[in-house]
Amino acid sequence: MKIAVTGATGFIGTHVLKELESHPVEIIAVTRDPKRLPESVNVHHAVSLDIANPGPDCYEKLGLPDVLIHLAWDGLPNYKSLHHFETELPLQFRFLQSLIDSGLSSLFVAGTCFEYGMQSGPLSADMLPRPSNPYGFAKDALRQQLQFLKATTPFNLTWARLFYLYGEGQSSASLYPKLKEAVLRGDKVFNMSGGEQLRDYLPVEEVAKRIVNLSIDGTLSKVVNISSGKPISVRNLVEQWLAEHHWKIELNLGYYPYPDYEPMAFWGVDQQVDISSSRRVR
Image 1 (cartoon, rainbow, N blue to C red):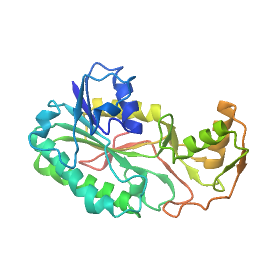
Image 2 (image 1 turned 120 degrees about the horizontal axis):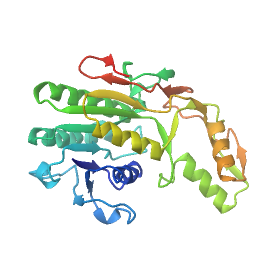
Image 3 (image 1 turned 60 degrees about the vertical axis):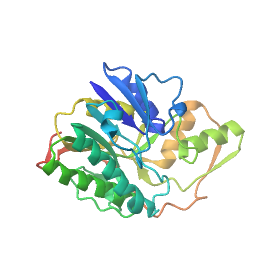
């Protein structure tokens, strides 16, 4: 089995490549700059490709993979930018449609919990999406476009809504790297929000494992949450990280306001929903 991964040099992509190494598959890393691939990652082929301008015979250039794990998406972490639906959405669909029209039979796409919008509490995959920012809107629109495409060109589609994740290699603007950097600098205080918001977090290694397993088991087109199913306050999570790593720093709670693009309390329900019938399968 050949598996291609777009966004291969990104935070999630590098961990997905590492996880794929433990499976008997041929790994194709797709990135604009193969030189950015970590030396610790072993792939069979590295393909230089910009999905905004993939060129003709794109599927052949990727090596005719059996499965595409599609993680690439530009414009983050600015969730409110109109770029997501003005620019990113149409080029993403054109790229994926060209692969499917050329023969790609199985597609995994990373969605987002922001597709649920400002809905609070436990969020299940069979809930009606209500995106409230441009990023969530564009992702949900891409899912709908791909489901319409399935009606004319059959292929397997796994749409996985990612919740929050953390780990090595994450953007320096994220909570975990910021905390680690402050500790290593010797800061006495770490500024953060009040920390009472409830979120759903998983380590990136676990997210990568689930992505790979879902991609290899392409027996059913589905929408799925990749989440822990266990809400945790951001304050408790940070305190957990401090205890786990034996870090010493004082938390300055309430320094930053709570984000206005997400509700105070939401988490994922770990389930899968059959796209063709909207039936829960797990």
